[in-house]
Image (cartoon, rainbow, N blue to C red; front, side, top):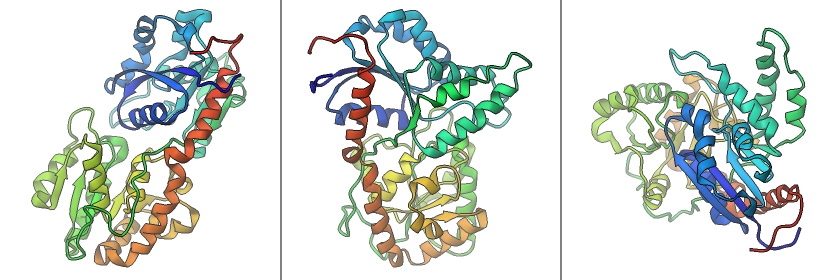
Amino acid sequence: MTDRPLRFLFLEPFFGGSHRDFADGLKTHSRHRIDLVTLPARFWKWRMRGAALYFYQQIKNLNTYDGLIISDLMSLADFKALTGPECPPTLVYFHENQLTYPLAPGETMDYQFGFTDITTALTADMIRFNSRTHSDAFFTALPEFIEMMPEYRPRWVSETIRQKAGVIYPGVGITHHDDNRPGMQSPEDPPLIIWNHRWEFDKNPKAFFDALDTVQAQGFEFRVVLLGENFQAVPKEFLAAREKYGDWIVQYGYEPNRSVYCRWLRRGAVVISTALQENFGLAVVEAVSAGCLPLLPRRLAYPEVIPAAYHAQCLYRDQADLVSKLARIITDPGRLSDLSQALAARMKKYAWENQIDAYDDLLTSLADRRPGVLTDL
């Protein structure tokens, strides 16, 4: 393979949140040419069922590409069945998977989505997960999922998929932090508590607002910034919080302007996650890089993403531990400024500028799997 920039097609069936940030970041920072074709971030179940058919009609000539990139919310097996030998070598990036994703209240598991993940992985040339935690969870759940079949269980799929799988962290748009960061809160102002996650059940907003209710009842004063996207109806916890906290909520809702969003993060004292599901934590890394001190569950991907030296201060065991740690921060957020600055510096490893060479090398390796030599662009 020559040193020329290669050409890749990126199909993203759910262009929102971390999926959007990842696709845009890779396209912007890669030395290769990446053509991005997307669908809006809604109706994820229908995306897994039907996005392949839509993309098949949109892409006129796959032969011009050195490789194909997709995320996990579509059926690669369907797409390859439609395109046949024209389909170039394919990399699947798993932001989440349907074997371990928590079910919404009242929902029952649709096993077909798990099988779509399996057939997508089997038909991919390369698979990458966004954390070791995510990869381990998938390969732990996969044999258990297969064993649910009443007979003729394809136990061979686990090892076949594992042979082509690996881990590479997503790049993050890092907001640089310093003592004179624009928009920084005055020491006399109540500390800002940041929520910048999706407004959905798997981020467990009830536990977040329960913690705020407890520290407020204890007499502590603070302000709240509620960011993050909401793809369906506003969860009742947010509606109730808006009524209860009133002017204490200084930002309510998704902020599409990146500069304004980053300005809120730079003003924050603490970012809290109460997630039930988190395979990396891009929003947390963004906030920590801007100078927010994180309070995160001692589970999911957080112990992997946050350096071990900071676990005692930043990871909580249970709801009571979250409340206790939050109360200490609210009491004297300035006391922890050195800690937040040190953590912000450690987040730089996830910046796209420091991740992109690994991605470009991965894409070059993917393109090497294509038979023959393509003409230079």
